[in-house]
Length: 255
Image (cartoon, rainbow, N blue to C red; front, side):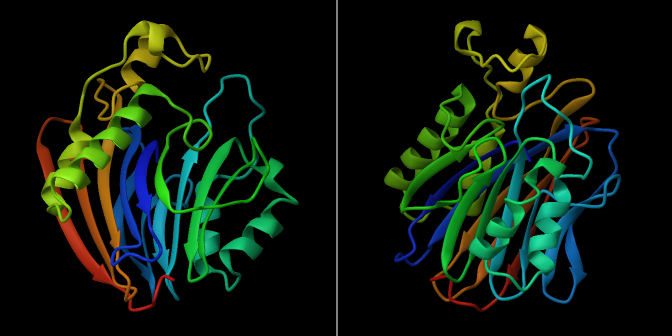
């Protein structure tokens, strides 16, 4: 998972509205979203066994992105296992993060977003502070929450404008916001240690290179009654187009 923008309004009819793109090498084996076990829904990284985002029993949601900085120490455990571990645990989101603080150096740099009935939380092992999410509009890519990378700012602004122009936009209209291919000007690029050509390619909301790009786009609409509407577009890197699937899950009040 490499980019997300979301509106968190716990007292609204749709407490969480979230858009996300997952970027990965086309050759890395991946399973699209499916039911793992009773109550747990997620895609799966077939190589490492974890996932980038998912839904668990009791109204539990999780999403992870890498924190990109070339030269950082590599962890010994796959970051994607954090999402699946949380979804399968009985700990609250806050308690899970408190436990994670004691061994977060087992993982390469990550940003973790968790929700349960008590609210939403953000945590990064590059900052090491548990941050309860206040109501608002947020963006996250491969640096800390709301770091104003060009694509983070563009997606947040696009989502905000869409919600102003159409308070109840269609799933199709929201997912289309994730297709923007514009790259940032060189002067605005982050410096994460990659070659300039890669920094340029990765600065787009929707990434496409010969070997790496946006593999899937996701929309979550978590309603006040606890129902999650999950829409997922799978993008085919071979140019064969895309497919969209949708699910309605859960019945646990998110607030």
